[in-house]
Length: 194
Image (cartoon, rainbow, N blue to C red):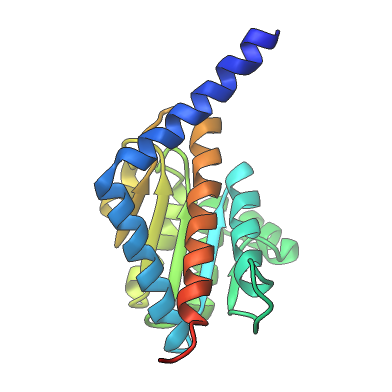
């Protein structure tokens, strides 16, 4: 069992190492930071969505902005779209699960808001539909996916595609990259004016 534990940890380390060595991906992460900082500076909001473990990650990352990351500072306007269970279950029941996020974006999304969607496959129908609704609202979109990017690859402004096809390793890297973005957004947005 000890060897199996080490093997799983090594697999996670290897995936993180692949992210570290991917200059294009690192540049995309940098652009995501710039995009979110610009949105907050314009008084815009950042929304997150995902399914299952990715919904938990979406909620986690939204809380890092609306709560705090490293520093005591004012709250930033960020939220995960799945937290209103009455809305989620009503829309899923009345219209179908594929539109639960798109319908929310239709109702509250504004131009230049940012939608971050987490989907390890990049093929989650409800996130694809949400990105389509976001495009109609002139919002910006960032997709967190696995290696191929799936269908979200052509539906987003920025693609953060973790170089792996293993769902747990992808999700671990999503949180790592999400934390990097949260830290750098916080540092840049709240940097003292020179």
